[in-house]
Length: 324
Ligand SMILES: NC(=O)c1ccc[n+]([C@@H]2O[C@H](COP(=O)([O-])OP(=O)(O)OC[C@H]3O[C@@H](n4cnc5c(N)ncnc54)[C@H](OP(=O)(O)O)[C@@H]3O)[C@@H](O)[C@H]2O)c1
Image (cartoon, rainbow, N blue to C red; front, side):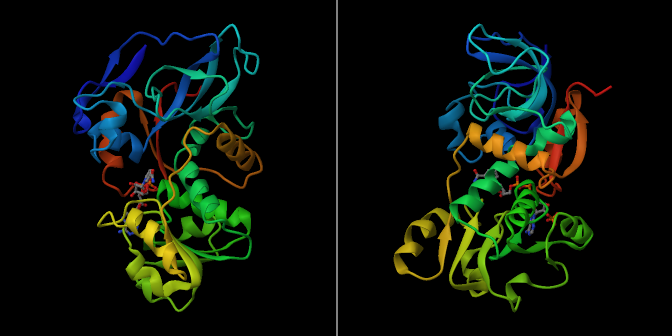
């Protein structure tokens, strides 16, 4: 089968599309014929081994896992002897962070892992990007216990995490103010934001409104800059370490002081329940991942280069098996 392989850490050019052995499956696994996957910021981090700690997960000197790719959608090609929850021909989607392997024509997955039947109202390419950014967004929203009627500002509303956060917050009934650039104001309004601030026209940190939560989904703001936007017990919630890697420390110290605080939650990865929740939100039409670009598997290096600009809008899909 064809797979995007990297045998050393480094720039996008370390990735080559090669012929490799098809994965074999154990009794409790299924073999998925991958139709669509994505390149996201997590793939970039593990391919480049930046930040350094990723080496503790995938190999100190060189990558133990040579085929990346966490998000996928495809068709079950074979099932292990003990699998009763899926049958050959089922259309499925899911998430394989940790074991990876979705940048390939075939992927093995535990049948009781983060793997779900595809909602009927989406294509492989539409559903493939629905388990990474959205999983982080959902985990941030749940950690901060955001509720209906709360006022939330989302900074970086056009990224994979931000564009999912706007939709998921809206479906919860929160009042969403989203920050993005001029070109994407209409897109973000279409995702359900009640109010949009164009950061090229005004400084969002000078906004007159006060928020229960400021969610930084771009990792480019700071608690210091956003503090005045928060209500007295407001939360600054971030998906990123922050410009000076300060968020983990602030998340430990600010709750001790009372009042406004920082949260930097560690998401629970590969949680089957999360993929189930996302499937329900897609089915009901409350969530639809934003897709900016599609590349064939043969051009995955170009996809990596683009994702690494940090300017993608929503998600970048890799088409492994074009839909007929
Ligand atoms: N906690 C975790 O485990 C985890 C996992 C994945 C990602 N992350 C981090 O979370 C952040 C977002 O991830 P993602 O996958 O959503 O990223 P992404 O899709 O690559 O985000 C790209 C978006 O960020 C916006 N952006 C970039 N710089 C900005 C700035 N200075 N101000 C406002 N918007 C800006 C861009 O909009 P413009 O074109 O308008 O600039 C673009 O739409 C990243 O920092 C990533 O490292 C954390």
